[in-house]
Length: 302
Image: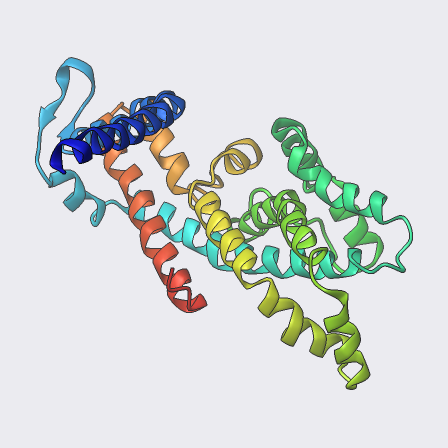
């Protein structure tokens, strides 16, 4: 009995091993690439955050860099600015993307393709090109000030790029303009898979368009909203390009973000790669914390 079962067991084991072996062959390059270009740099950055200086001058300082964060006014300013962008821009962008997706999902709307393309186009626009355009639009003699003056909304040109408060508003407008269409595409794709009979039944029951939006659309889009919220949060915490190209972090440090501060620590100030790595881990910690909070608020147990 055992002699007949052993060959069968051996063949079964050989088949399972062969299947697993073939599966690993398909993914081994991806695993090696992710390990080499993601996990290894993360471990190296963690070790680097325990040191100070650069190159041959690096010296082990333990947790001193992490203590230094709490006494670094520039870091506190960069952190505050980044959180401010996150709290204002991400909700506004998500709401606008939802509204646009619902409007563009209307089967009676004409030229839908044109409007969808126009709203999504900023997401694929050259960063440098659109940054130059925004600097021109919000300059002292730019079109925005001309419009406000012609409408008698202001008595003199506003210093959009040199006033600390207005410069933040300019950055928020810029990133909202660029990424709203990107998020809209996700919502629009999800809405096109929703059974239209649900809206028709609710309309027969007397539900208004606003009630349909809050009690049908948003609950059905909950997983997509959670996804886009997390992705937008991560992107805003890493915000660098718009600030660098539009305001250069100014005036002073009024618009500086954490990512820009990391760049300055590495290449603009006296290089301190150890402290820059420490600041970069703040982004990682914030991403983990805020993603966890968003999952909990959304009630996603998976």
